[in-house]
Length: 168
Length: 150
Image 1 (tube, each protein chain N blue to C red):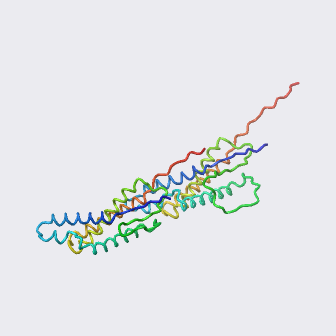
Image 2: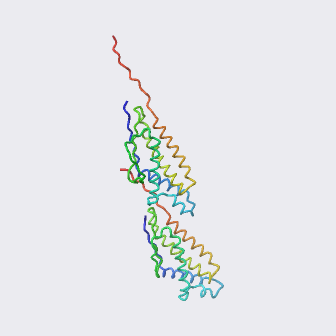
């Protein structure tokens, strides 16, 4: 039976915005009125040192996610490097799935992948800027990878095709 | 990053210090020599100059993480800061106003150590409040904006 190729695209702008928005909201809600410096450090933005750290974390998480899904990924590449991923290039992964893969979970896979990358990036970011909340995001990321696994293991039920027999 | 230049005019600060000290001296009851003692005059300039320098140094210390250049001269305090790209530029005027008040409070507070001890602390606290206000605005970040993928 032919395999199904599922292409998942993760927009960098959406990943970065989600990280920035969650860290912004966290900083705002942790404000006590006189911890402005601490709050500002929690809130990731487009400044080079912030953006590079976030891009590095997203890149690391994406690589780790591909390792977790390696049995479904085919790659002909023979080289690799550690260059920081671009903040303007979208991430794409092609999953080569069995023919009975349930495509109804495509959105679940892409959503869980998005959440995994975002939670890993925030976990890393808060390890530097807000240790108290870092653990929560690491836990969320671990749950997300399980969701991805669950989703890609969904299969459609086999259907019996009745055979037409010629009666004598 | 956002480049911001903050300027405080020294003469305007001295005028404000003169107004504050004159008003305090004139309103003080039961002390006939208060006005003469508290009001800063041109003869007190040398002392005020030292207070101005101390206030400038204190402000620069706060701005250190963002300081690009210090362009201060004999007529003003002027620093160029490299602030976050999320800095709210609408706050610049308000920051300058608070910084101006910081200079006035520091100078008046230090002057009162000699001439009106009972009010020294309140000006000291006011100066701390003013510089905190400045730093709060400097550290404030605008909310991130979503760019819809094409």
